[in-house]
Image (tube, rainbow, N blue to C red; front, side, top):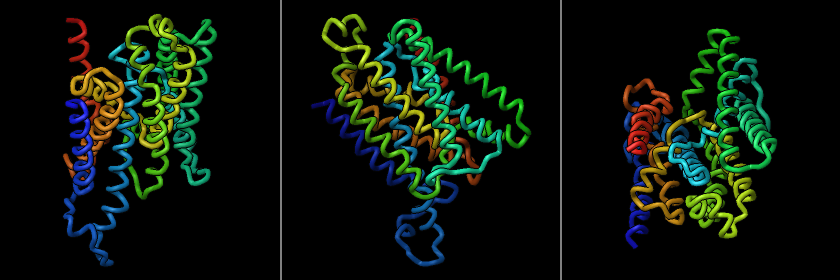
Length: 326
């Protein structure tokens, strides 16, 4: 009952944050201005067409990053693993870098070219990691982790090479995209990310029993009747596609997948039946708050939200390293 109460409190805090965050920014918007339909009311248009969609995208993106980190940490039994460990984010970033370097300006079915290239890069990294793992004679979590780290470094070097070949303007655009950001206008990005959030939450919830067993060890999971290879395959592809979809819209926003699951374990414990909804809510709450800070700290200028999460996540990561070594 106490754990469910904590999750309910997280839910209420998330709702309050979603209502308040769109009001914050370079200019504070009052509640009375939101529903003013007069033609000269720019604040109402800013709220409904820019800030509210942006806050919704931030919440869903943060929830997906956090949920992905929780799953990978359970699969690999390593508290320092993040959604970016397996190279999916690096592949997506490489795809976006190539698009910017080529100077293209295309779209398909209303989807921007940079999102398409980014998602294709993420899918390419998934195929490479899975192929490398199969070549080593199986798809154990240890093999996939090593393959993912190698692929991540490989795509990272390719991004540097593309930046070197780019002109000054293109190199700046690539660097800016790699910082992560939530530049949203209208509700299309919301509906682009929504399927990933809903399907991801429902699917991870379905595998909570297996995730609880995975935390005890791969051998024990096999002994308890869990089809380890099938479960790893499903969760790997599911989480990788989720990350690829989100990164294609928001860019690589780091450390949420490390911070949120650990804080939620301190709040609700390690049981994934409760940890899953708590991590989903806290991840969305965390990125929403970071995005509000990025819009407000040096207004009217804006800090890329990836910088805010990195500034918070770096010390947290060091704290985890020190805590683990003690």
